[in-house]
Amino acid sequence: MGELVHRDLLEESVEELYEHAPAGYFSTLADGKIVKANATLLAWLGYERDDLVGRRRLHDLLPPGARIYYETHYAPLLQMQGSVSEIALELLRADGSRLPVLLNSTLVRDESGQPRVIRTTVVDASDRRRYERELLRARAEAESRARAALALDHVVEGVVLIGENGTIDVLNPAAEAILRVNAAVVIGKPATEAIAGWEAVAGIRVGRAGELPAPDLVPLLRGDSEAWLSVAAVAAGDGTVYTLRDVTAERDLDRVRSDIIAIVSHELRTPLTGVYGAAQTLLARFESFDDATRRSFLELIVGQSERLGKIVEQMLLASTLDADAVQTELGDFDAATVFDTVLQNVEASERGRIIVTVEPAVTVRADLDGLRQVIANLVDNALKYSAGPVRLATEAREVAVRFTVADEGPGIASTDRERVFERFVRLDPDQSGGVGGTGLGLYIARELVQRMGGRIGLLPRERGATFYVDVPRSY
Ligand code: ADP
Image 1 (tube, rainbow, N blue to C red):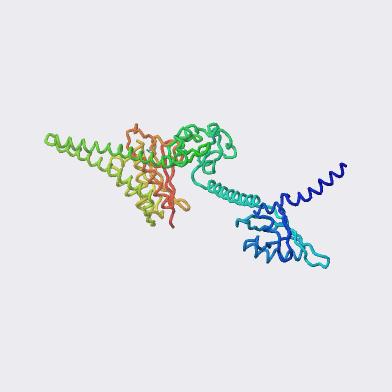
Image 2 (cartoon, helix red, strand yellow; image 1 turned 135 degrees about the vertical axis):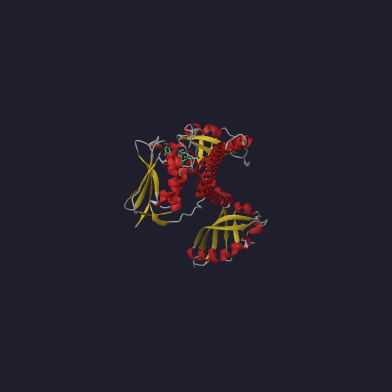
């Protein structure tokens, strides 16, 4: 008995399975007429059985594009192979809308080999289409994200994304360079632990998403020097995006500018006070002074005015050198002639301190005016910073001629031997030695000598300072 029930169920369920299977089934004759269709397909397409079966042909269910495809590919393939599978098409529903499907067909032939019927299964591919569209969208998005990451890798500003819990989620290469950290090491770590001084950055106001907040200037200790960062922060999702720019150089430049103003005003004020004071005194007491006193006041005025002029000239020359607007004119001349005018311009009272040794008949190729200016500056410094004798010499070498200016003053410590050639560097900036200067003389000298293809520097000496200038020798 059990077996009987089983068979009943089985027979019933075969029919059931055909009608209500999770796939559509239909059969067509060779001319395309639909002769059988299951309930699933009818439900999908929205047809009553009688509207479809025996009345319509497969063509009627195909939109124009699919119809052509059916004629040119589907049908011939079926003829040739006896079956086709997984053909993606669209079927027209009764209401005119389209159902994306995958079709699998088998051609059944009669005994004489003539096509009798085509059995087709229909798989609803709407989900699959959706899946494919989603796949395409996801791929496009992934590609766009990859491009975004590429942009982030090459943007010149540092970009750091800090997560809700304060950890570093993203840190681009520019941020690595600015913060001197290795992304591979710090990502995932709390920013305040991984980046020294991050507290200051994290302390700035965070703009709302979409806002363009004005950046803040934040100091950051980097190694043993201080860096200045221009930082803007914007809320992004549950984190914060920080944009960083290293503005240390700009700030240094600003400092140099304010240094220039401080130095120039100080340096100009001293002689100006002298000139003004002497002129006022002379004016107030002109009648009561004798000629010699008047003369000494006038001399003071002339001397200080000259100093004023020199400072202004140095400033101008330094700025034209910076702008690379100085022309050097190279010529051949006897090395000894360089010292002549230099000596003429030294004050008579100081001239006695100078001892000159020259090698006769040595020719150099240089800019005569420039070289004289350089040597004059070195002689000036030697007289200014020392009290003893100042020795000038030329020494002919194989390819160069060396000019030296040596004094017996305090000298320059080996650690300062390069520094003194930098702009505005004065080893005694407070002028406790009572000697004025702008710190531009040696900077100008080096710039000029380099433009002649020569070299200037300090020789190591136990006593005093010995400056040398090498310029190309000419034969
Ligand atoms: P300044 O106008 O201050 O003389 P320079 O550029 O000519 O500027 O020199 C820079 C600094 O180098 C000076 O301020 C001084 O401290 C130091 N210096 C230059 N020449 C000598 C020297 N012969 N002896 C000692 N110190 C010197």
